[in-house]
Image 1 (tube, rainbow, N blue to C red):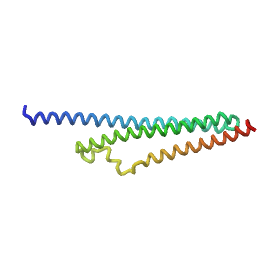
Image 2 (cartoon, rainbow, N blue to C red):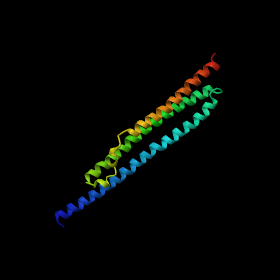
Image 3 (cartoon, one colour):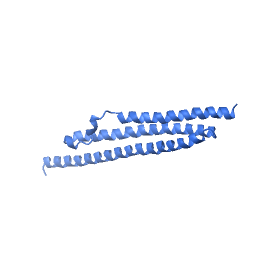
Image 4 (cartoon, rainbow, N blue to C red):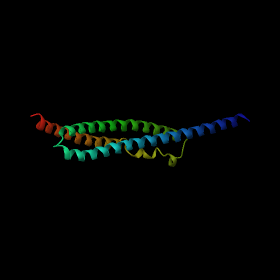
Length: 156
């Protein structure tokens, strides 16, 4: 075995390892993206459903409505925080994939992670923040209304 054959073998091994790292980074990014949306769907769906019940009971149970509103505000902030953490991990993993695509000098058509470069960065994130802000605003309104009703019914 001559030196060029050994170099070829190491290069092939390095390529296999690089492809495996690429595959794992891709899987991890997809996993964290799925977590981001699953957690969001669960919390947004449950707080929307809860809102329907709360609005019916606000006059009869203002204190319980207030506690529910505060809990929903907390959950909305919590899911926003989780989503941003999952987003950071996902983006870091996609960055690894882009770097590997460049390092392996893949054809432009094969580069899965540079296809999205035409989309403005953070567009989806801004809409996510806006939707979360709407949920929080609605729950703050419910909290204010239920505090007022609690005061009127129980403190005067």
